[in-house]
Amino acid sequence: MWWSKLFTRAFLVAVRNTIVKIIPENSWLFKQITIAGLKINAKKGHLPLQSLVMGVFATQHCNLNCKCCTTFSPIAEECFLDIETYNNDMEKLAKITANKLTSFYVTGGEPLLHPRLTEIFDIARLHFPETPISFMTNGLLLLKMPEVFWENCNKNNATISLSRYPINIDIDSIKTRANNFGVNFKYVGGDGVPVKKMWKYPLDLTGKQPLSRGYDICSQINLCITMDNGKIYPCNTISNIKHFNKYFNKKLEITSGDFLELRNVGNINEIYEFLCAPKPFCRYCNRKGIKLGIKFGSSKREITEWV
Image (cartoon, rainbow, N blue to C red; front, side, top):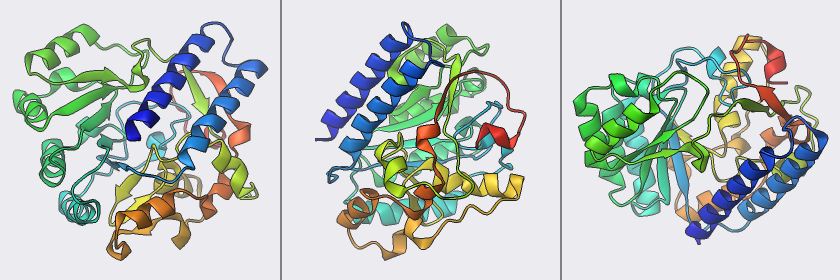
């Protein structure tokens, strides 16, 4: 059941947050514990799916500049989700899924930079009337958003998922504003303590990683599924590698086996089947080379942040 997977993930996050208070993140022991946890989480993702979590990138760029950003936002050009294309994609997805998803999320970059963000919520609610909707934000712009934004979040029951970074934002005022407008509020990962350390998931530019190795400890399996311009991608890395390739003049290849064309999908079982297997692009992911305990800070836009 989908709720069992969410409970398991929440439990693993709670265990991780407890362990990190005892064992330094940059230690060998913490890395081994982390890899073991990733294996457990990934193994559950390998099971035949019975539900689907889907997301879209409202923007590719961001108003923060975090080093080792897993979506490559510091090196991404300004880019906004096209509303008309998005609406067409959502209409197709709704037909395939019978208007049902486990949850739908809007992410970035920073979603609040999109000038038509409320339309993104409206379209999601139109096609998926019973699906939980959330948007991930760093919170920098929340208190600057007009009343119409908050009213729209309330109307569409869109939950704020705040990534808690060590930045200067007034959390109490944000919570008060959300409460005043009847908008749900939560923290990404379920913990309100600021994230002071980052993780780096290095890329292997040679593309020589065994497919099963990265897949067996991948943190994104069936949790970071995204849809963009008529395609379904199994993870953020594949959908956003174009920014890395362009900025650093690299050619990490995306093949037809790395995504699904919505127009070619007949039913939801085809999506399930696609998601529960390694992708050709997995050969670029050096998951065992994960770097932990990197101090939160600004990106210098150097390739070493991602390889």
